[in-house]
View (cartoon, rainbow, N blue to C red):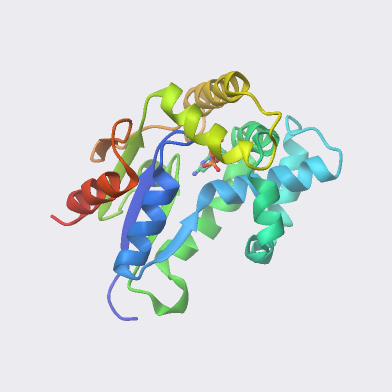
Length: 217
Ligand code: C5P
């Protein structure tokens, strides 16, 4: 490819709808898509599987150095990464500066050289517009009220685990948001030049139309 790839950065808190929007934007423009949360979740999955503590920075760093992106092509592993326990461990690991540095380049490589010679890439996460790709052509920070996000996440988790309660999901989500926005390194934050998109009262179609309008001018 000759020209610089177009990058769309989609950030926001857990279950804000950013993943769905980012995936749809990528399909619409035929760009590559990277769910950067799945990288942190993959580290968490590895750390937990080894019986290590997610708070242990050397465990996170070891997992980052050994990260095999091919595991993200396995639907069974992807499903295992979606649990709340993995999300919480991912957030503990994501607060560790050396571990973040170790996977920063993986994200930038995909943005700089999108696979399959695509003309652009859509990355979703917490720090795409601020740290990973501050040069992104378009930045959207997706939000929604915590109760609405918890309900969405509960609907998703409940299909696999009927025991999971909405109250528990809301508490996990709020503590994860708090940790992600309070950490010293690359906290979750809207870039100054990001467009804010509140999806609380929007259907998926309405949210997608709004996101498309934001990146189309
Ligand atoms: O987006 P998702 O909920 O899958 O992310 C899991 C965790 O990974 C987040 O709670 C956050 O701590 C971390 N993360 C991050 N930076 C990103 C993407 C995810 O710190 N760019």
